[in-house]
Amino acid sequence: MPSNSTKILLLTTLVSGVLVSVSSNSWLGAWMGLEINLMSFIPLMSNVKNMYNTEASLKYFIVQVLASATLLFMVVMKTLTEDLFALDENAYTPMIICTPLLLKSGAAPLHWWFPGVMEGLSWENCALLMTVQKAAPLMLMSYLIKINTFTLSIILASTIVGAIGGLNQTSMRKILTYSSINHTGWMLTALTMGENLWMIYFTVYSILTLTVVSAIKLSGVSFINQTMMTNKEIALMKFMMFTSLLSLGGLPPFLGFLPKWIIIQAMIMNSMAPMATLMVMTSLITLYYYLKISYSSFMILNTEPKWNLSSYKTSSMQSTSAMLLSSISLTGMMVCTTISNIL
Image 1 (tube, one colour):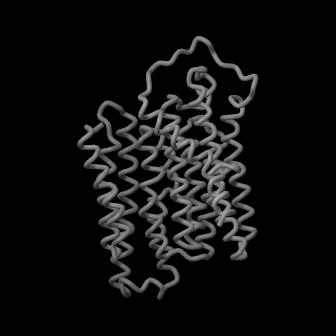
Image 2 (cartoon, helix red, strand yellow):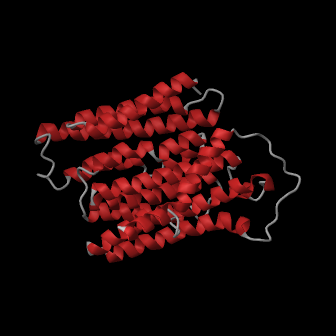
Image 3 (tube, one colour):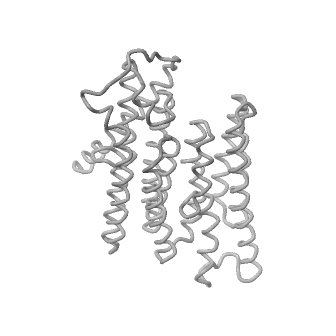
């Protein structure tokens, strides 16, 4: 793991890579931005002392290089055969260029690398991979994406795989991974409706993901059965973690329901009610496996071991930030509804 000064430098270049990619006016510039982003994230992931981190960083590197090489090849071929900026001449060109970007963002059916990579990462890197690393590919896809059979099939595959894949998991990292795949399907739908919807969804999703990851990291939980083993001293942390999980799943009246509500409304207005129904059904499945984790702890007569002592002390700064994020997650929806009613 790099030192703090190196981390700051790498995080700066990571974000600058995303900004270069998003603000570029050519596909070659966008590709360069994606490469800067990748080369900044690999050192952040790798850790000499941890074999799993090294394995995850190697898997991620191979997959991302494959996607980048494919994207560059497609863009060069497009330039040689047609015009670099005219992407509407051929109906298949947007689909071909979107495919490596879908692989980069971990959308189904190109999600096969995502759970394996997430399982070997630290919680900070998991949060980065689920939020920041999705921003550039999704923004680039917004230039090309249209409502057609290809896009709808990718959206359906992402929402269904994200829902079904998380049902049988015991690892918290894998549950969050499949939830992220499900959310990617919703974000792709938001992109077809407009960039403003995508910005709202992505912002809320990022806040909730950071909330869940910070709460899980503080409670030191990696698997479902460990949630029952946490003692009463961190009952508040437990409450924060479970309410944040339910918010991420999209349960009303939490903040996580707000962007889904907006997208469902936009889909119905665009005569996509059957698709919206399917997506809501898959969201209910994701909510089921979140409830499965939190149900036993929310019960009044739940069991907690008296012998399990806190193995480490958490810093007050970490606890404060987690509580702040959790309060946003809890009250955000109610505040937004109140403001909209006043206006």
